[in-house]
Image 1: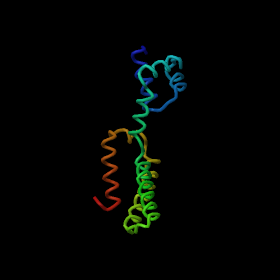
Image 2 (image 1 turned 135 degrees about the vertical axis):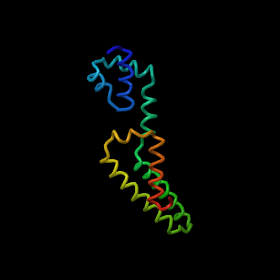
Image 3 (image 1 turned 60 degrees about the vertical axis):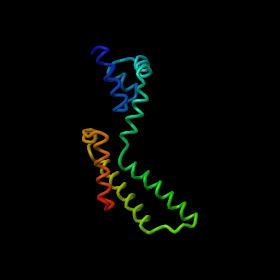
Image 4 (image 1 turned 30 degrees about the horizontal axis):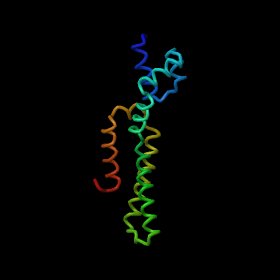
Length: 136
């Protein structure tokens, strides 16, 4: 393969597939020094971070939502504000849904996940969350 073919392939392996430079070096038979230069020139680290952030698992997002909600409930309790029982019930549904999502994501083949764009996955996840919470 030529440099013109290897460079994009190496970038894909690093940014999307999250391989180390050493793994890419062995796989494509390119020196790690060359890969380090390409990585710096084309800002692979920034691309990798953007992709990782947009590919965050649904269950992780739900747990984050649950953490925020739990902190707000706790703060209201500490401030002496009466917490509506529905807030506790909603928090429990979020936690349960996150656990179901975690189990599902652990068994679903990864290639199926990437067939949808991040926007399509987010829309689908939101629909599932609304359904689970009874607001669909």
